[in-house]
Image (cartoon, rainbow, N blue to C red; front, side, top):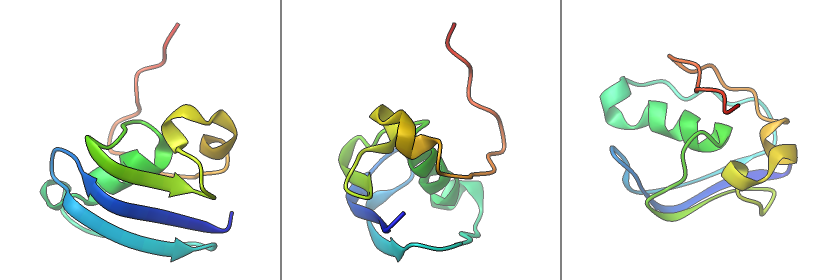
Length: 83
């Protein structure tokens, strides 16, 4: 993985978040209400931003299974599996 880039991401807690993480291991700590849980969900492809972009190697994790397969995220609750 080369980079994770969040550009003007808006979600339920995030309001215009911007960040770039180069490849490697990163830890995001925070309370669920401050948007840290939402960043994890965006990276895992569980949710897509209401506005803005979340890109890993230039691709959207929510619609690119090969990207999601390379992301390790610990979520408070596992996402529902579609049948």
